[in-house]
Image (cartoon, rainbow, N blue to C red; front, side):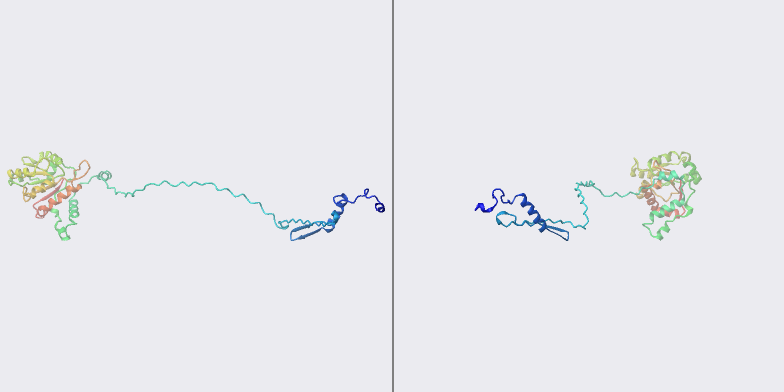
Length: 313
């Protein structure tokens, strides 16, 4: 039977599936059956493998699909910027300060020295005394009572113009002093009272009276080292013509009936003298209060009766 074939089978063996001839035939079949489709930006390529296997077996179909997700006409998106990493931030809290209550500003009172530095000192006048009397009693007296406290101009003597010493001033306001002191013989009373701010000032004034007093009896009427009862006994024993002291002690003597103001003829204020703090007698509240209390103990009525004269030294 082999002889009938004509060709020796071993010289021309059948082409195998993996032979070069079979590969060429497969390639041609694939190219003829391949289809290319373009649809909305998707490219599909299908490869169909025909029957090229030996033994009559059907070759499996292999399908490969590749899709391009990018549209041909879509713009190329810009690359995203890298997000900055958050940096740590440390917040410093302000230091707590303990705030106390706010201090109110105190009103700075003007000093007398500051006022005098800007202006020259002026001598006291009767109008100054009248104004102080009105200011002092305005809160406790009615309008009618204040009118009664108004002193007549006739009771005021000439005021010191800052050129006199005490002796020269007293000689000017009381030229008949020698005659008056000779006729005065009442105890527990004086003819002239000089009011000052302190015991030290009273001693200075007594020393400066030598040219005026002559043979007149002078008595210290202040509280320093002298008790009230001792002064009352001295006033009861002898006649005193002239008294120099503070308004507080003189007021106390009047209260205890140790001093009678009815025979009094002259009341002199040490008005213009200033202490180390440049304060006058009426600038000190305590002294000013005692002066007005003394005036209210009979001096106002004596001035209105024209039996008592007031002088501002």
